[in-house]
Length: 99
Image (cartoon, rainbow, N blue to C red; front, side, top):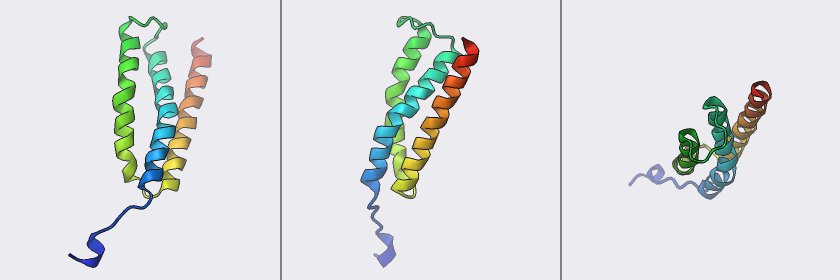
């Protein structure tokens, strides 16, 4: 084996924790945007409510798996935190216009 062939990522735990802790607020904001888009009324038996309820877990698991592609843990925390803030800002802005 070559010397540089074996590269260990020492930040994998912190990248995973960034996706673990910041993934839920990000995905809840995405669910809120989908709820506004589908005109969800909060009825748990509605198709749009079921879609939002069941899409959280696969998206969160996907985000946890993709967290290893960040170059550093600082980048993971920054991007996921920034995306969470952006999604929630868009949600509250659109909710203010929709109500």
